[in-house]
Image 1 (tube, rainbow, N blue to C red):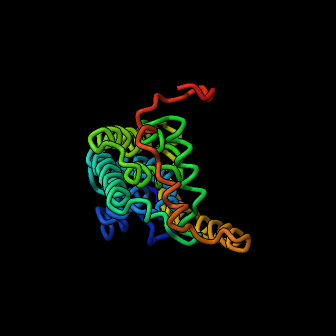
Image 2: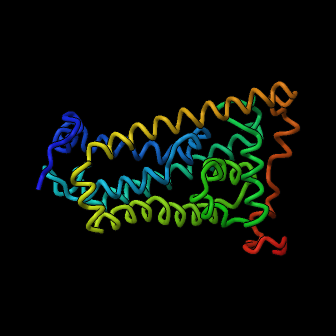
Length: 256
């Protein structure tokens, strides 16, 4: 049974007719930016993937949900976007070297985010590329850090592929799967317009909040004389290649 949308212009039939695959393109770009661009940490990737899967359930006006595309294709395209983003991030770091870290502290870059990412590599070794997919901020800087540290490309690409499948494809299908729970399915069918509004508005609000939060931190650090990363500091941020060969330290005792 189709329920009339509480907000007419967010009616599923209207969205599918006017946006459809274009909405999926936006999702894919956001997923790409999460790991392909150093500003991706501003975006709420995990939530977006689950919602994308959830919205791929059949709705009045489309048997394939809001995107109008089969969920398997939706998940594959999102996973591919995650993989390509990871490859681009690695290439930026590999070609640019430590110089990519020579930046002023701002709402789009923080030295502490790089240090946090390096700490993950120090503890978990090369498989950080996989694990980082599920850790906000770290997943944005991990590909670049791996590239700057010259992690072997073949190994990086293998881990990047695994991570993209588990995160991009996996979380999208997880979202689709929970749509089979009767109360969830009923809620989506009844309030699809509000879900879409929350998804779009929430993404925008979280992005803006992250930006101004990081910008505020940058101003505080600048006032303390830590406003920019110079060439020497950037060199120190480059990981030693042997880090990528370490066995993961899952229990946190410092033993590899």
